[in-house]
Length: 254
Image (cartoon, rainbow, N blue to C red; front, side):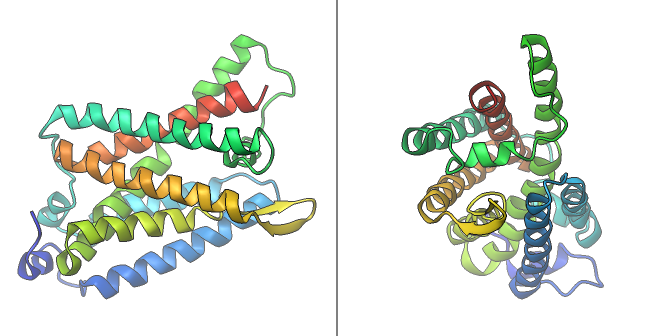
């Protein structure tokens, strides 16, 4: 159900001036900050600590800007249909697996594969890992990847940003826009890369990466609709990250 303009304004706290323009400005600010932080982390082979803070800010924003009614409108509510959660798990696993298989078929395990480049951010791993050690680190990194980004990004993109655009454009166009914004900001994670001491744009690999993420986001949106709750999108995203972590530990870092 699409929000009316009146309902949309009532969903915000009184000191906020709601509208698609406000959402766009907020989206641009967070995207630019994130882009810079990720690129810097990749260049310095640093950790993603500050990115985690940004994800936490995305979690806080709906509770800061929206009242109880507004939070319910963006999907922060009980699951209505559990089959939507099941579909979300399938969407997340299969979309990630498809990206891996396509890129592996085209580029192997080279730096042109998104997962190979992202694996560089997995800091603190021993050079040699036996089966038990690998499993322990897999669970550690999987746990981190399944919590911070799915929670923050889905509340922000599939929740707040989506509903802000949907009031004016409708849900179909809003899904396209929040998916596009998500895939564009992930060019900092892969696409614009720092290799051999210089920045490079891997054009075709980045196109494949963006198309894959764009399609995945549409499925995350679908999981939200099917479950009746933002938790559907969060679960789908978490399963995507779990699957990516599996491929990195058991197909890339070997």
